[in-house]
Image 1: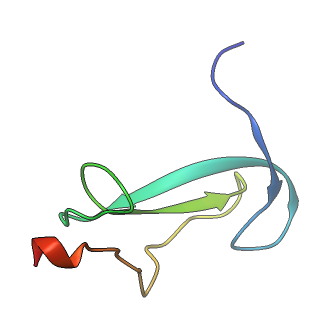
Image 2 (image 1 turned 180 degrees about the vertical axis):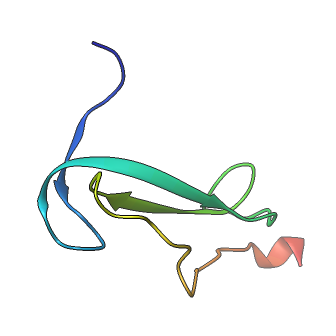
Length: 64
């Protein structure tokens, strides 16, 4: 067996069970992720994840 098995509630349909992860990457350097900003959606095998409508990015004011 390889990999990590995550279990919980699907963020799309709410079904409990094993979850998959889908990452949506953005070409933005941020303080909250490295090296680029991303959103993570945890979902069951039956759901198709979609890019969130909004994301929150943390920036250091020293870098603006």
